[in-house]
Structures are given as C-alpha cells and as structure tokens.
Length: 75
Image 1 (tube, one colour):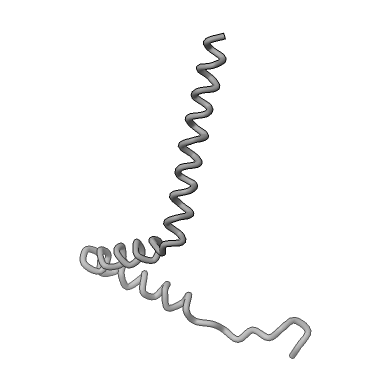
Image 2 (tube, rainbow, N blue to C red):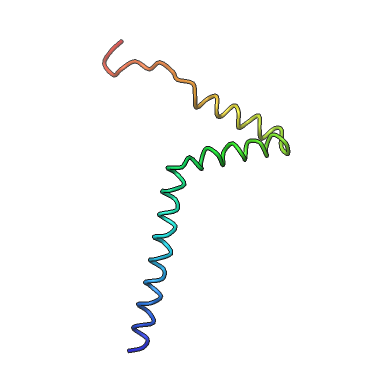
C-alpha cells in the first residue's frame, strides 16, 4: 500500500511542476517577455555574429511585409 501512495505522490509532484511551468509560460507571454528576449538575442547576435544578425533583420523585414493577395473568386 505504501508503493501506491508513493506513486500517487510522484505523479502529483509531476503535475504540480507542469502546472507551474504552464503558469510561468502564460505570465511571460502576457508580460511581453518574448519580444524582450528576441531583442536581447538580436543585440547579442549583432555583436558576436554579424551574419546571423543580418539574417535576423531580413527575416523580421519579411514578416512585416504584406503582399496583396486577391480574395478567392475575384480577379
């Protein structure tokens, strides 16, 4: 019977850790940590890897571009 309680305890701890990571992820997305991390990594790449920074900036420019695509059925 002690093995059953130990197994339930391990599973419970795992669920608690996963819930904590999920809550941390939601909080960091709301706070804008992703854009701050991207900016920090871009600054590092600019200093250490100039070709990687140029690639990052080109990818960012491509993301910001919009192409005019006609609606289906309209010419």
